[in-house]
Image (cartoon, rainbow, N blue to C red; front, side, top):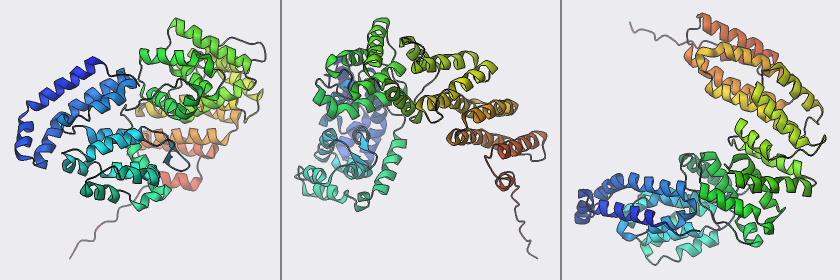
Length: 466
C-alpha cells in the first residue's frame, strides 16, 4: 500500500476548511440536531465522493490511506456510511458459501471508528444493513471479537442486533450481497496490495485479481499501475505459477502497454507458451471466463494478443485462432469468406473444445452489439442479420449458442413491440410474420408461445350502472 500523495492531503484539508465555513456546519454545532447533520452530509457528501473517486482512479494503491484520512473526527463522519459499504463490497467472497475468503480488517477498522465517533447516533441510521451484510459474510468468531472491542454498552447492543439470524442462510446472504453489488456497480472503490513473495501472492492473489478485473470492467486506466503490474509479472520468482498466468492473461488482453512493456510481456507470454505443455487450454479457460464475466473483449483486445504472439508453426492452435479473429473483425462476420473460414476452423476442432467455444463467443459478441445498439427503425437489418446467424447456428450445432442468439433476439424484439403498437400496422405485421416463422424454424419458441407473444389482451368493459 502506497503513502497518500500530498496533493490529496491538501485537497482534503481544503474540503475540511470549506466545511467549517458553512452555515450548515455552524448550525449543527449549535443545535446538534440530526436534521442539521443530514443537511451537512447533503452538502459535503458529493464533494467527498468526488475526491474519493479521484484518488481511486488516479492512485488506487493509495486508497486505504485516503480512507484512513477520512476517519479524522474533524470531518464529522462525512462520507463514512458509503465508505463502509465499499469496505464490505471490495473483498472477494467464496461464491459457494457467500463468505469472505479472508477476514476483513479494514472493514473492522472503519466500523470501530464509526462506533467510537461522537456522531455515531447520526450515522447509525445509514449503516445498519451494511453492517448486517458485513457480519453475514464474516465468521461468527470474527464478528464476536469485533463487538468485544467496543466499550460503550449501548453501541455494543446495537452491533449485536445487526447479527441478523436470517443471514445465517446462504440464500439471504446471497440476495443482500447481490442487491449491494447492483447498488455499487458503477462505483470505483477497489484497491489492492502487490505481494513481494510467493507465499504472499498465494494469500493475496484473489483480491489482486479482483482489483484488476474490476478496473477492467469499469474501463479505468492508470499508467503508474501498469508499470507496477509489468514489473510484478516480470519477476522470475513467480515464473509459470498459476497466479502469474492468470494475471498475464488479463494483461495481454486489457492493459494498455507502451513499446518497452510490450517487449517484456510478449517475451514472457511466448516463453510460457514453450514452457507449459497445457498453455493453450490454460489460456483459453481464462479467455472464456472473461467472456462469461462480460469483460470488453473485442477487435482491439484480440489485436493486442495477436501482436504479442509468435507463430509456432502449422500446429499452432492459438495463433490460428487469433488470425481467424482478425479475419472476422476485418471483413465482418457476415462476409461469405469469413463464414467459410469459421466453418473450416470449427470442423477441424472438437465441437466442445475450448477454442471452438472461444470462436462462438466472438460471433456472440456481434449478436450482443445488434441487440443493444440497433435502433428500432432498422428492424429490416435485424431480419437480414438473422439469415447470417442461422448459418452460424448450423455450423456450430450448439444449444447454448442458440439460446444466446434467442436471448439477444428477444432483447431487440421487445424494443420493437414497445415501439410498434399498432397491431394492424404494416410494420407490426411484418415483425410478427418474421418472428413467427424464424422462431419456429430455429425452435426458439413453440407455436403456442408465439401466439401468446402477439396475442391482444382484451380489456373488459365496465358495466354501466342503470
